[in-house]
Image (cartoon, rainbow, N blue to C red):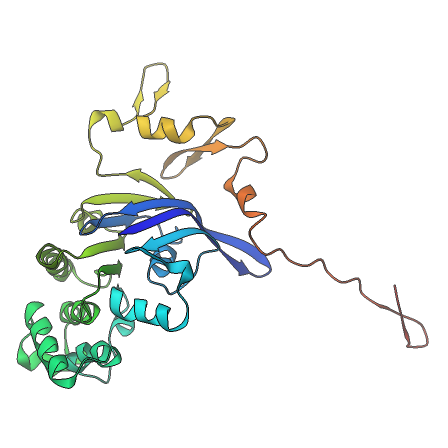
Amino acid sequence: MISCRQLFKAYQVGGHEVVALRGIDFEMAQGEMVAIIGPSGAGKSTLLNLLGGLDRPTAGQLTVAGQNLLDLKGRRLDDYRLRQVGFIWQQMDRNLMPHRTAFHNVTLPLLLAGVPAVERRRRARALLETVGLTDDQARQRPAELSGGQQQRVAVAVALANEPVLLLADEPTGSLDRASAMQVMELITGLRREIGLTVLMVTHDMEIAASADRVLTLRDGALGQDLTQSDEASRPTLDGEGRLRLPEPARVQLAGTAGIAVEVRPEGVLLRPESPEDGSADALLLDMLPQDAPPKHPRRWSWRGRRRPA
């Protein structure tokens, strides 16, 4: 369903390149549910934006449901975002239109997709019933609903046009624990029922545990698969301080000129170093726009006339 190959994303901020994603290699199967965890600023939302067609990568390959997203432009890209991918955000105002009732929020994407009025009403009622809202709640605006109820409406909106992929960016981040678990039970139940592919980013390991796989994302790079819990996937440390790495880590570090060891507050980071400069930034030099050199300033003569430098 999803295939990312050497996916890079960089932004120009204040005349400098900020690298948000560094060579992401990632695959998901149809019907799979994957959670990505990591600190703020790790690149989680950037990855979702690329997969949702809301942004474009700086370099790399990106395919969803057999479509090369880099080839989609104009109406084809609009159609992808409207019909093939659904979004759930942490911020309620990104999920729902505040002046529309829950029912009319669900009918909006159907209207944009050209679904006839009778079918719009039928599908909206069925979706709101599926997510557990009553007819009275369907007639209420978002401000009149609880946070958990609003996210249930957001799920219905995201699934209105029967997308093949659901992207959830901290979908329970603004909810209390009971409401968060109810929303996750709803998402996982719908995923099993209709074979939906779900990619979710979160800070919450308890929420991430609902997924088939849990991956880490830090400093723009995918790391450990936390669902691998057998002994072979764990590093071991002997009495003399020698560290034996699991096979996936040895494969990742094989062939590197050296390994940098960085002690951080949250742990110890091992990072491969290249002979050139020891970082992935060298790979970006040829693909990122570079700042133009500053123009030499003109000098002024004592008479007030400019003369070339």
